[in-house]
Image 1: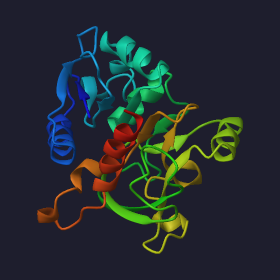
Image 2 (image 1 turned 180 degrees about the vertical axis):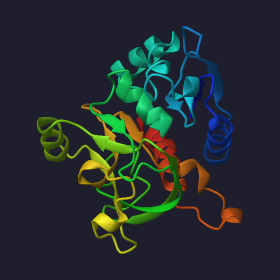
Image 3 (image 1 turned 60 degrees about the vertical axis):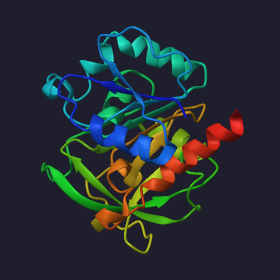
Length: 233
C-alpha cells in the first residue's frame, strides 16, 4: 500500500498516523507538505490526520481546505482513490466539499479527550472490511468540534445509502444519547462520500493499533485497507 499523509501547519497527529500505516502495511508513507501541488506517483491512499491546522482559525479545517495540495487530493478522490480524514482531517474534507455536512462545537461546549465506543454499521466498505457489521470497537477521541450536523435531506440520504460507517454507542452497541459524546446527529462518528472511497471520522483509530497500549481495535481499519488494495491490484 502506497500511502501519503498530508501535513498542514498545526497538524499534530501526522507521526502517529505515519507510524500506524508503516506498522500495518510494512511500508512507510510519504509525508506531503500542504504547499505541494502533487501527490507522489502511484499513491493508493491519502490520509489527512488530526490536529489543529492553521490553529483552527476561521472554522476548523477552513484554511487547510484551500491549501494547494487539496486540488491534488480532490483529483485523487475523483478518480476513485481512497481518502481518509481523521478528526481535523474530517473537518477539512467537509470544508473542501469532499464530504457533506459540518462539524460543530460539542454539545456541552467542552473538549473531549478519552476512549469512546463505536458501532461498525456494515463491513462492505474498504474502510470496514476488517470488522464485522454491528461490531463494537473502542478508540480514542480528542476534539472540541466533533458534533456532526447536516441538513435533513442530507441525513436522510446518508442513512438511506448506507454511508454512515461508524456511530457512537454504548459498550453493548446501543444508541443511547448518554454515549453520544459530542451530540452528533444520529450519533454519527464517520461517513463516506457518494462513491464510498472517501471516509471522514472524528475518532482516532491510529492510536489503538499496538498491543503495548492495551487496545488494538483501530487496527482493523488499516488492515482492511491493506487487504482491499491487495484485492484491487
